[in-house]
Length: 244
Ligand code: ZN
Image (cartoon, rainbow, N blue to C red; front, side):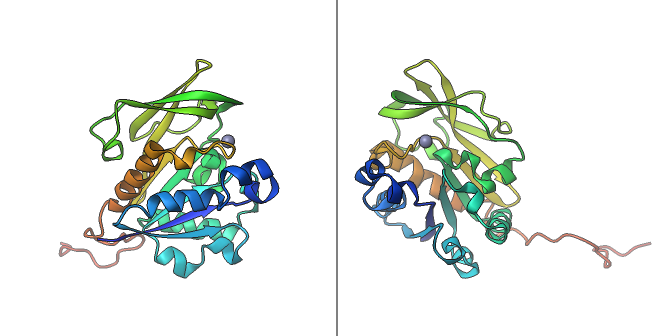
């Protein structure tokens, strides 16, 4: 079965900062999409903030099984109606992969219900990501741990609800640790938060990072499954059994 992925990116750093453009000449979304396009079971499209409706119109979302989200500078520019549309689609079963600074996106904060705040330091530290749940499908094909030579540090406390499953934990050169790969379910939708991906480092070209994102897309697409009944809420005037 083909999984339809939409890779969403704010696409601002790459157009305003030559250092970021040098790392991501095709945009962060271009690099993430290129990694996913190496997978034969994925059909990949991209969308960015400055497109009409942020590239996330009704038809696009209706035809998206999994949405990946990278944002940083312009979280507050995401329109209310688009936010509501994405939120409704997640509750209805669309998978959502929230990347790096997307921890502060409107959609992630809405779905988590917490501040999603954390500690951070931008000094190009070594990051080692440990697989803490080797049985999880998102860990498929990974070694016990893997290293990113230079990344921004994100540290605990990370103000999110306790994950349903925690797949990855990061250690940083400066000593901090962080819950780097966390799974949630909201409504029928599966959500995965994945930490790496600062805009000045070539993280989205890394083989292991690409593997995690592709695995996460497949996991999120599986969702609770289309086979179950549609969700039905509200007044139920007809009882399923005869009332005595
Ligand atoms: Zn960053």
